[in-house]
Each structure stands twice: as structure tokens, then as C-alpha cells.
Image (cartoon, rainbow, N blue to C red; front, side, top):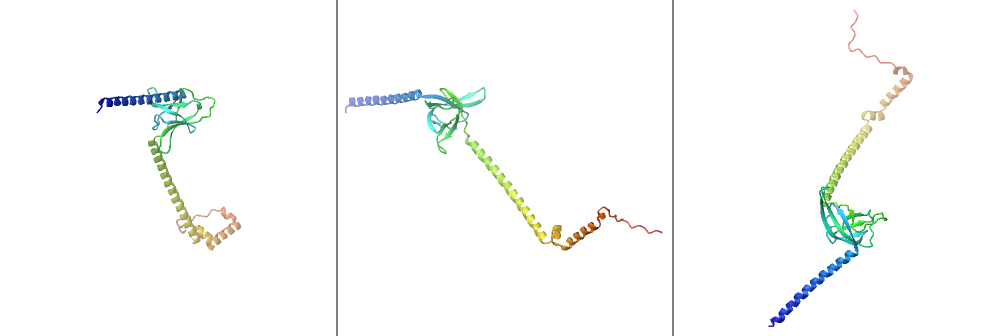
Length: 233
């Protein structure tokens, strides 16, 4: 067995492996340098980013224009809150109006999070190198749950109100039907008035009598004495 040849091959293998690693790092550095030269830096400020990661795409009007390079958590003692800074590199030649809206969006229902920029209308001023823009915070999942619970509660309350209103309408309809039935059966004042000829005739006679003797409307009828008068001696 030739141990010297084996040792030489081992050294050559290590040298080739190290050379490949160096070449790989060199390519990455060149690519990073190229991206830095052909892009400008923009910082997005959020309170909550819902899982955005380094390397996530940045889209402008739905088109990939950049990439998230750094994510920094900044705690402010002056405002007593915590902000998240997303540092992204935007491809040069992409002009983003200063009044654009920035959102955290999702690829699909449960897909990768990315930065979405909706174009503004101020095309006189654009974001430049080291620009900073405030993003719109996404809604956390627990707030989705609370919102769904609130909607369900209000919906249940509305259904109860509708049920109560339906019962009230049903009760009113039943009472109305009972009233019409009583009228048809000549029951009650209205039923007797509409169907009983004797009551109608009495009213007619009363009206005729009042027309003949209108003074009766002005005369107060005498009250009957509660106790009979004693006979004179």
C-alpha cells in the first residue's frame, strides 16, 4: 500500500474543498455587492410585522422590486413602545411615490409574508436612498379571533331580536284574526254595530230624534235622588 500517494490525495482533496468554499463566499460577496450597487435602501417602520423574514420579497404594485435585507427591533424610552425596522433594498429605476401605502401581505392564505407597496398619487416626490416610511400594521391572529367572536355575538343578538319581532308580529296577527272572527260572529261592540240591525236602528232613531230636538244636547238630565222624599204630614 502506497501511504504517500494516499496522503497526497487527501491534501489535494482538502485544498479543493477549501477552494470551493472560498469561491462560493466570493460569489456571494460579489452578488451582494452587485445588489447593493444597483439598489437603494428604504426602511419601513412597523409595530408588528406578523412573521416577515429576511429575504422576503418587496413588491410595488404587485411586481417584485426588492428584498428585505435586515430586520431590527428598536425600543424607544421616549415613547415607551417598540418598533420594528425592516431594511429593504429596492431596485434602482423603481420610482416609489412618498405617499405610497405599505402593508404586510401574504402569498396565499397561509403562505410567505412579504412587503406590499401600493402606489401613491404624489408623483412629484419619490423615495430615495435611506428613505423611511411608516407601514400599516397587520392585524394579529388573536384580534381576528376576537373580531370573529364579536361578530358572532352580534349576529346571535340580531337573530334573537328578529325572533322576538317575529313572535310579536305573529301575536299581533293572531289578535287581529281573533278580532275579525269576533266581528264576523257579531261579538263585541264593533261586531254588533256592523251586523246587529237592532243596534243600528237604535242609533238611527237617536240621530233622528236629535235632529228633531237638538235642544236635548244642551239639557242636563236630572240626577235621581238616592233617598226617596218623605211624605208630607
